[in-house]
Image 1 (cartoon, rainbow, N blue to C red):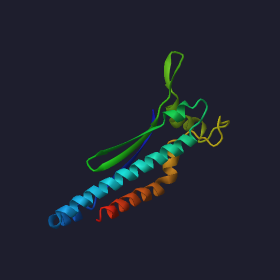
Image 2 (cartoon, rainbow, N blue to C red):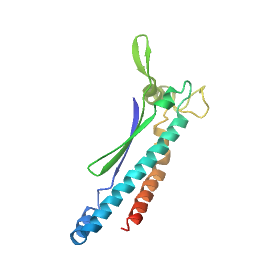
Image 3 (cartoon, one colour):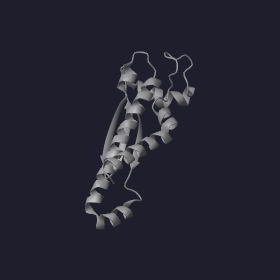
Image 4 (cartoon, one colour):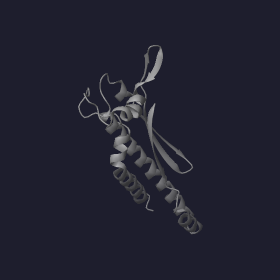
Length: 157
């Protein structure tokens, strides 16, 4: 399975500020935490949707199985939101299982480079999961930040 991951931890340096404010304004602290959580969740979901869209456009389209296999998952643990994108197309060759998605994404670029010599679909690339993340990292961070700001504003924090 080919996969990549995005992690966003909003529980870092603002801990001191949260504790200080929390001592004086318990309801404010609750609204702040809720807004941070809501904004981060929405932002990570939006980023993962965009990442899937871009990866799908870059994945080779011979039968469509690879593009259809691209999935995303968003999870949260201890104030840290994570998004994962993956693709898996298992075929059987000579009685052995072969993960076509993993081969194209991980092994093909090492052997043949970052482009196809004769692509089945123009504009497709082997590292269809990683390239969108590399190209959009700063934009996606701004998107998540914007969702957090919007959530703070909605909750009047």
